[in-house]
Image 1: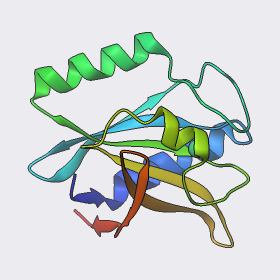
Image 2: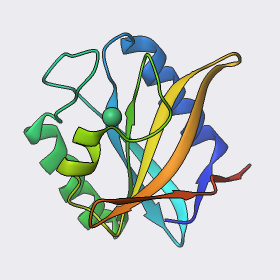
Image 3: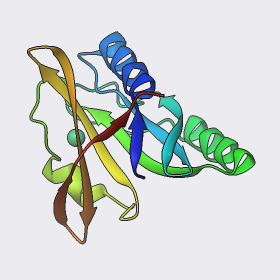
Image 4: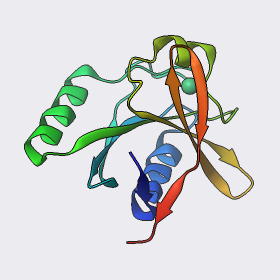
Length: 133
Ligand SMILES: [Zn+2]
């Protein structure tokens, strides 16, 4: 993961807005270090404070990435009521040290996003690098 295209972030905000107050979740595929595609995935828990991805949609997205030679760079989910940081459960359940964890939360301007990596239970904040193309 490196930079996220603004249009992809807007796509994610739209999806988050559609299903709030349920947590939204999904995957961002990357190509040549920039976001290439967003996969919205159904939250089968239908919960306001937890998510679990629909496994069929998740596998379909992973297969599509393989076909397109994209990499899974970022996994996103929303915290409809904040905070803009990973929860204890998010950290415990995280199995993707090579991927970014993007968290979307409410802000005065609508939604905002914060990027993290989680390695061995440690959370690191990353700059969110956006590009306009
Ligand atoms: Zn969370």
